[in-house]
Amino acid sequence: MEDNKIQLEKLRQKAQKCTNCILCQTRNKVVFSDGCETAPVMFIGEAPGQNEDNTGIPFIGRAGQLFRKYLFETGYGNNDFYIANTVKCRPPKNRKPAPKEKESCRHFLDEQIKLINPKIIVLVGSCALESFIKDKKLTITKARGKIFEIDNKKFIPIFHPSYLLRYHSILEGSPRYYFKKDLEMIKEMVT
Ligand code: URA
Image 1 (cartoon, protein in one colour):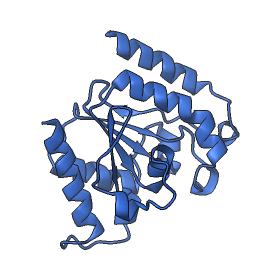
Image 2 (image 1 turned 30 degrees about the horizontal axis):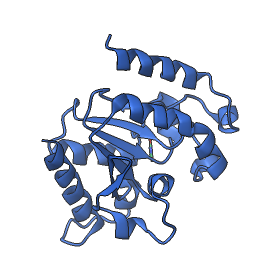
Image 3 (image 1 turned 90 degrees about the vertical axis):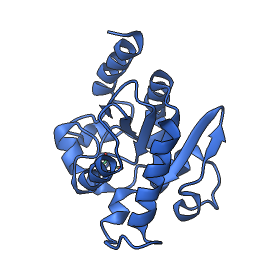
């Protein structure tokens, strides 16, 4: 195995045993990642939901299936992306992860970013946006599709797929329209 894969596997094993925050008390499975360790694009979502907690795989529930459908439709293959979340364990009742929980899980995410070393980090939804771009006035609607350069890394926020579940239109200006447009732009940037 290549070095970064070995390191990621060690990190995954460490995360499986993590008891750094209270989410460990209610989780079923630690949801570490999915996708390719050498991918040019890394997606960072919010937190595992019920389906993710049951399977240990991120973005596998209803929002995740829609997300993966869009990825497939915009030409992303299995080697093109890696997926993780701001926290590795499901917050009870799908509440937003608390700042303390995000902080205690952050070292796992930072290490994943370091080892994957993606060309683009995609911040999926406002929770991921707030974790990386420290601007309280910046909403996901304003930030989506823009490129933020921090410490020589490119970050691009996009809508969260759970938002798309509420809006079905694909017409120009709709959330689904922008979601697809942003995924296409990101794909173009790494091709
Ligand atoms: N929503 C997220 O943000 N992440 C998941 O893994 C599933 C749903």
